[in-house]
Length: 401
Ligand SMILES: Cc1cc2nc3c(=O)[nH]c(=O)nc-3n(C[C@H](O)[C@H](O)[C@H](O)COP(=O)(O)OP(=O)(O)OC[C@H]3O[C@@H](n4cnc5c(N)ncnc54)[C@H](O)[C@@H]3O)c2cc1C
Image (cartoon, rainbow, N blue to C red):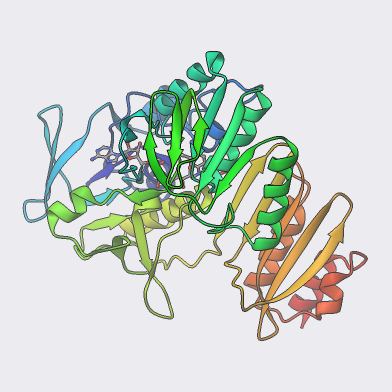
């Protein structure tokens, strides 16, 4: 086995390329990426320094070269032939592979209302450049979708002095991934900052200078951004006849229904121990899966079993969530100086934790909480609630037990 091809040069694809070398793989590694840039990080696009969008490369060209990674920049994979083990590219090359990784990420969902072509996407550096350059002269922006990306963008553009409206179909923003307690805090903070919310509202049409809601309300907008979520990019996998669900289905070692093709990151839906598949859109998920898939492509058989984790920054507030909090979990609150933690217990066992505070202030506690979750502990809720009880001490005693 000496040829590995990776399709998609985002977080998962690029990290996997380097992890192959770290795993001792000495054959050829080709990284194919549609975007006309060096691989870059997406999270900074919605957290720009001083309000100016900047590109944070994952690595430089010389680092790719030094690792012997052949990066095909601005090239798309058009078609896979799983029987011949080859992939046809947009530059007319056909690459043969022994193992192939699909790290194609996700694509923004599109609106289907009249005027929807006026709404800007927000997924790539090029999208961010368009939005932030329009924001230099624009006065008002309507963000359709009150999820994490829409709310981060609302905070940044409000900070630049634009009139910001967030339009959301659900009755509350941030309902999908953020625990209700913290979703409510962030919502309140946006309102304090002057963001206007239109909740429980569908879109009638988008005109040249406004978004008209389903109930006829007109929301003035020089700029309209659609942030209504993403769909996994399964186009190549579907064409190839791979098993698809909410993403490219893989086993717990990130192998697809074709034994020579693997998938990782936002495009991959990974088999779960209790049955079913889970897809999780987050930066760390993409990196961790990339590292495991690389070791597996190089001959390992490691199961992916990481605790889901993500963060979001809005204004000066940082939220981190580890695990998957559910409404039926027992909630335990710990007050912190300028912040708050919430722990989630399932039949007494700690299964998730979330924290909101200034900047990065909850990071250490969430890291310790993750270790407690991984240790499978059932801590005393009173100890979890007590800010005087050190989480490190709880971990130590759990380990000793
Ligand atoms: C604005 C923004 C802010 C975010 N902020 C956070 C955050 O704060 N915290 C967090 O945890 N996560 C955040 N995320 C999510 C995180 O960035 C993603 O989960 C992560 O980038 C997924 O990595 P990926 O490699 O799976 O996919 P992607 O980064 O989408 O990379 C996939 C790449 O594959 C390319 N590709 C697709 N098809 C082909 C093809 N046929 N041929 C060649 N190339 C192809 C695509 O062009 C793309 O470049 C944010 C995302 C965005 C957009």
